[in-house]
Image (cartoon, rainbow, N blue to C red; front, top):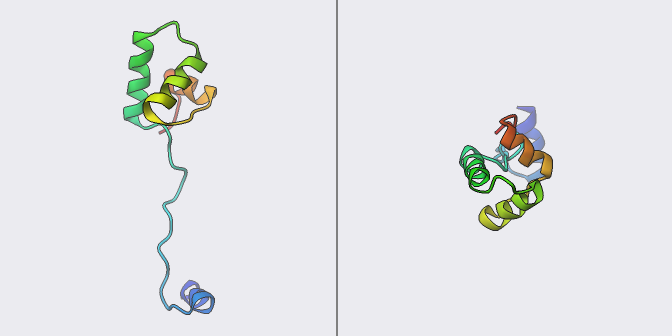
Length: 78
């Protein structure tokens, strides 16, 4: 009830506004992780920087070198 009252005082509305989803939005989902692994199988001598460039061109997702490495290692949390 306190939150609703606070909302009323702040905005004049007697209902709670919708909250954003909890947690961090993941940049690497299962689908992208699979595509990254497939690309590494096709081009095994690529550096992490080359792989990051491919990920940006292909999926428009910017990843750090460490996140690319963790994805390949299987340690990344999704």
